[in-house]
Amino acid sequence: MKKILTFGIILCLASSLFAKPTFDKKKALKDEGKKEFTATSAIETVKNMKTGWNLGNTFDAPGKTVRAETAWGQPKTTKAMIDGLAASGMKTIRLPVSWSDHIIDQKYTIDPEWMARVKEVVDWAISNDMYVIINSHHDNFDKPSKMGYGKGYYPNSVNYEESAKFLENIWAQICLAFNNGYDEHLIFETMNEPRLRGTNYEWWNDLNSAEYKEASATLNKLNQLVLDTIRKSKGNNQKRFVMCPGLRAAPDSVLAKEFEMPKDDAPGKLIVSVHMYDPYGFAMLSPGESEFLPKHQNAIARTFKALKEKFILNGYAVVIGEYGAVNKENTPERVKWFSAFIKYSRFHGMTSCLWDNGDYRITKTSADKYSEKFGFYDRRKQVWFFPEILEAIMTNVGE
Image 1 (cartoon, rainbow, N blue to C red):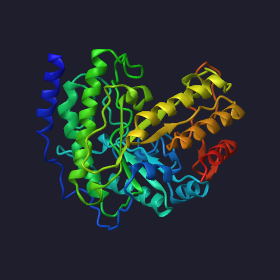
Image 2 (cartoon, rainbow, N blue to C red):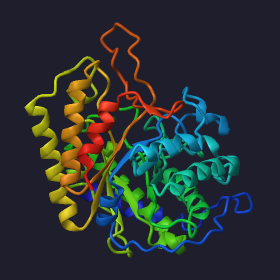
Image 3 (cartoon, rainbow, N blue to C red):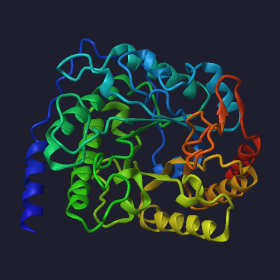
Image 4 (cartoon, rainbow, N blue to C red):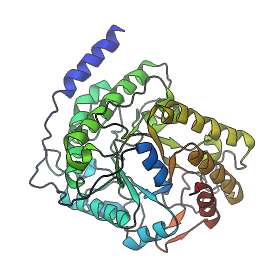
């Protein structure tokens, strides 16, 4: 108990050191627009978001220039691509963005060209009356040892100071670029799958371990820091809907007692961010299971019910920021999975955003041949690789 109290005091003292961002305001992109922000309830807004899609492996890819957008083999994003998504029925787009590669000085200043490109794509989606989620995506440092300047964040005590500086500065700049020109259709997500990279606890946390408890406490503080930074930017960002994840963005982490939503002066504006590739054996594991069974449906139903009972019934909205089932050459079974997943998502008042990395072709014969086969939408031709899956999603979204 003494160690936990001491750690909490250290974090509180450390957080007070970062009251003023250091980025170069002369270089930072500024929002000059003006839109009225009218929505008051995150729970009702999430219902209106209906169903969504991730622009995966694009703005989250590594690289120091705007050319990073295509570094992982995806085409450059076009307005036609976004228009096609809207025409297919998608109401929400999650835009994963990595920022650490685009810091251009020793003040945490983000490359204005990178910010402008992100802004361009956001505007294309909003022009289609879509909701847009932007985040800090692949900025989680890759090992628990002390990281250097501008390397991102890491949810442990040794890296809290640098994590706080990084997150406060990038979010202050995002808020400068996206504020009064954007209403409730723009949503901020503090981090993506924050986790203990480079350790045995990266994906499979021991909820009773000291490492997990320390990481949870640190992440709670970082979520609070980002939310405070967003609110300090004033304007529409004082009312902005904000998504906050637990460790790994996993259901078990947000359902654990250690996870705490940040305190917010703006009532009803917070959203729990969760990723669900469930059950793992069917949705992700290669080769895993390829037949969708009643036990899989029951597992999905239990998770959605638990999320609703802990959060929605207590005033917090929930967005499934990533979900999907890899292509195991089992389209009919995946159609069943998607039908069940979206049915439960909507029944419990949640929006789910399909993870799409553009890769659906089976090219290997090894046991991992299905790994990461999360391609659904042909970005070049604006058609769906598996129209049956799109139909299953849209049929179960409802009005």
